[in-house]
Length: 178
Image (cartoon, rainbow, N blue to C red; front, top):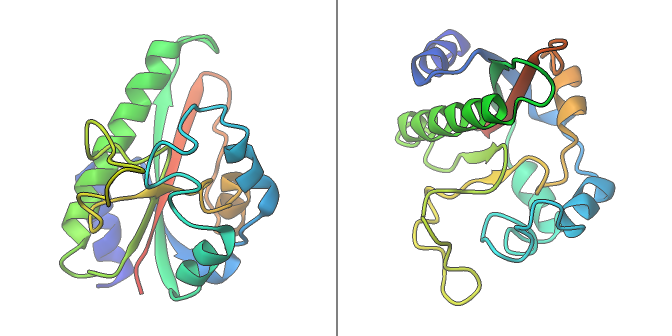
């Protein structure tokens, strides 16, 4: 599947931006993983897609290094002001729906792909972690941060804008394909 076709699918899924991702530019950083451990999002240790359930940073590194090619996807939203929590949540919800839609479009072509979104996996209403295995491991996705990626750096290294100015918010994810 070529880049033009992937871009077309990304637009159909609802993303604002889709760009090729050079997996060689990805650096997994212990400092980013430590941000997860601070549990600011309240998901640490509560989901198979978040640390420690998604594996150690070394295990994540092994998974990422199996891939050579991927795509970055982004949803950009407009905000009334910097306190527009409703606008932020609406954009996040749109991003997650687009992310699941594109994942489901790509899985037959790339059954071994690694999907890394914004925030933890929300496929199930309640995650089975840690009491039982993931119910849908082929549909599960972690966040880029859970894998130790500094999203601003991944965007910069691959020619994708991260900040679009006042009154905007952007959610970014990626699919590692081959």
